[in-house]
Length: 155
Image (cartoon, helix red, strand yellow):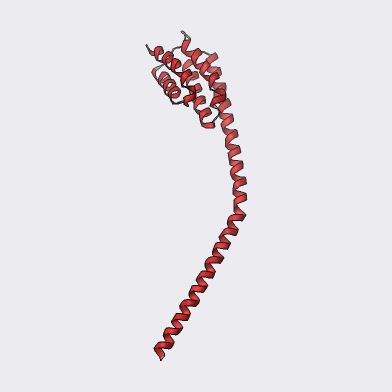
């Protein structure tokens, strides 16, 4: 008899424990959902602000690189100009704005490559060739002749 009572009490205890566990699970899920609902709008707002700051930072970097490249070109520092223009191309691809501005930069690089007074070292030519090769396919037709011009600068 004691064993039966004990078994019944154990069964009731397990049943009550399961009910309590189920109840806590539902409450935990509801609490989790409430916390997520409360935090998500704040996270989205924060994410939006971070993206805005990132965009502005990249825009400022873009402007600084362009200014540096232009100054280098005017001063006859062609190696530096090539490096800056290559950095600028890479940045514009990363920002997704290369389709708007790449043609202007490619024209500047072409100007350097065709300039007989422009002396370039192997590092500058390699950087230019690698950067031009890695541009999106939309630019490849314009880049192929430019790559050959840069390669001839070493010959």
